[in-house]
Length: 125
Image (spheres, rainbow, N blue to C red):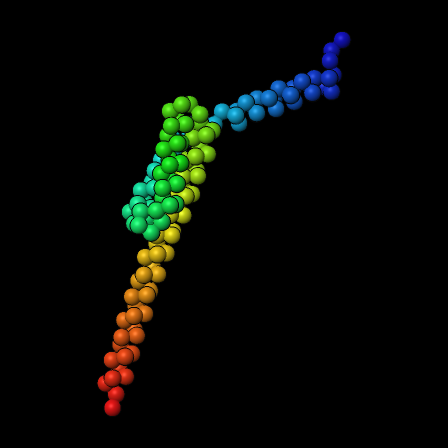
């Protein structure tokens, strides 16, 4: 007696589902995430984050170092997680540094405007 479609449907569905789950579980190594984290840290350093956002930059550097160690140890999931965290913290350091630089420039321009106003008032009879 030949099995009906209903009888083979469940095993076939289970095989397809198992195959799909296995393919999802094998993610590539997080080399791209590590490279992005390195670039984010470098960008923050170039934006003077050492001076304006040293805590955030220090955290990003530490996470990047831990991600590299996890990658060397073969723990790709941890390396990916730490790389993403390092990139996010480096981006935060970059943004805070840029904000500090922009605020300093704004304050300088305001002081210049105030000086010009003072000079104009002194020049009026």
